[in-house]
Length: 284
Image 1 (cartoon, one colour):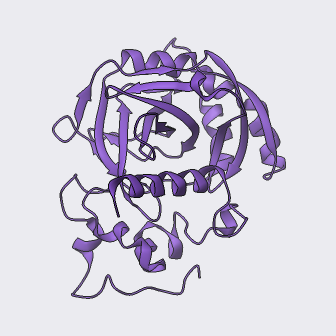
Image 2 (tube, one colour):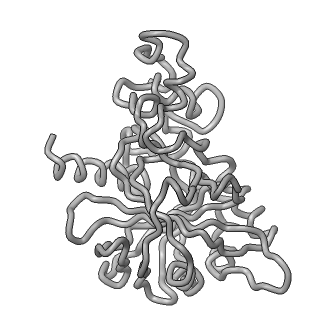
């Protein structure tokens, strides 16, 4: 497959999983064949479909432990978003999704690694999927972008959320979603509009060190070629804001993978030749 076609296919899959129909017309967590724990968790994703082998064989898997020696510091990153914007909020595919409502996509531009992107949506992982120099965080927000210049190329900006310390103020992105989270606790299938304050995350990307690496989708089929930009500086949230998120998403994070270029952890744990070839009937 040509690079263009592969990137376009990745974008189509990623967007469908995160904001549209896949596996039929139902993207509720109960309808997805994979999960994040037990018999459908990350350790067996590669056995659930022949097309998901990269989950156990790829050497460029996400998420990773962000080290200065394994990632690249990039400068002049910007999220050129409106300070406050209207989004649609809903629970889907194990995560709280915050998706653009119909509007001019140019309003939500980003400059990452010298290239132009536009925002598709953002969502929350609990706990944070990446770690930073072996430190983990309670929340990680993923801002998913599509390249303006290279069709199908995805870039994901990751911003950690950590608990409020001292006299600092919590980031308004969390309080912006308080009412919607309360409704979703009662009606998990609700789709709600929210005015989201983005000023804190915009400032975070402009002032923090951003670590770049070329990784993968952090869920099946675990395809490579996803560009990751991870902020070293977390935004802050209150414990009650974390609890509100946790009640909706539960555990929805893949465990940290091996360093880039190193053998896949599942391949290392495989007891013998051919053990990665088995495909189970779970989720079929």
